[in-house]
Image (cartoon, rainbow, N blue to C red; front, side, top):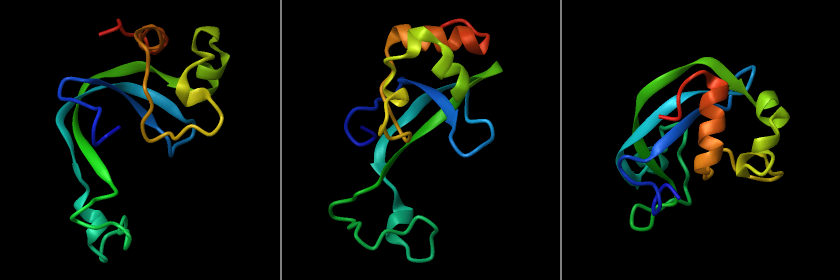
Length: 119
């Protein structure tokens, strides 16, 4: 998705996936479309991947900018407890947390839970 589907101007829900508690903490916007993650090619970098080839990269990233912080973080427990979000891809067993699609309805529910308008 980062390589092919995410476009400039797309909205992003910023999710803290390595914190306690796990939570969506704000809204960002994509400002640069997918490009190869150069750290995958450098053995001195934490994210070095010897299988990744500059001619056919494995890892991509996008640049984002902060649009709005949520006054109230939307925790994973709150996501689980919200019936309108039961079908959300990120809530499905086995889904990758790095990037998942969000419907307009899910976006609006999460923004409301976070204390902002659907922006």
